[in-house]
Amino acid sequence: MKYFTLIVLFVLFSCGNKEDILLPKSAVTVVADVQDHSPIYIFFRTKDKDTMAEVNRKNSIISTNWILNIDKRLPLRLVIPEVIKLQQKKREEKAHKNEKAENYYSYADTIGKNLAFIPFTNVYYKMEKPTGTILFFNKNNEILIENTIVKKEKVKEVLIQILSKEQSNNFTLSFNKDLSFGSYLQNKIFIESLNLDLKSKEEYVH
Image (cartoon, rainbow, N blue to C red; front, side):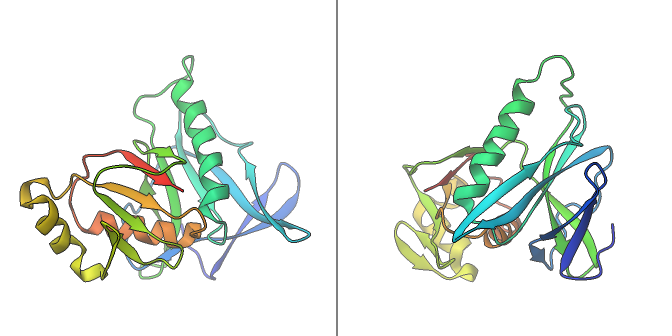
């Protein structure tokens, strides 16, 4: 899946309209290819001074892998409620359920010049504040652990100091609701790179 500009252009043949989505970017490839998939789009819209998220899932098939193509400019407070609805629909489906079908976010791989993907099938989103040991990304995209700002290169070290080496994966991810989806996805890829095998499958947005 090649991309040649920062704007990934999707043509929705069902309505004959051309729609632009600015995908997040990363120099890391988490998943290079997804077979048997259905695309879902969440577009960036504006009306007067308001920003809105518009979902198009006309081509989605429950039994396939879902790829969510989400505009990186959208804030999490608009994106995540829509993602929760989509996840709920797929999880509650009985007639055509495929236990092997996954959900992925797409992004632009700046090294391979391809689309790449990161899975979120097992993530359960909550629009509230978490408890316990929290790794929080604030609206300025700074990382806080136990309310203290930590540099990216020190995150794993600090978690081990707080939780011990054996428990360094026992923390909760939390994100400011006004963080852009583009920043969120880059942070997800960063957490993936730590190879911590997170115990908690919940992510909080508030």
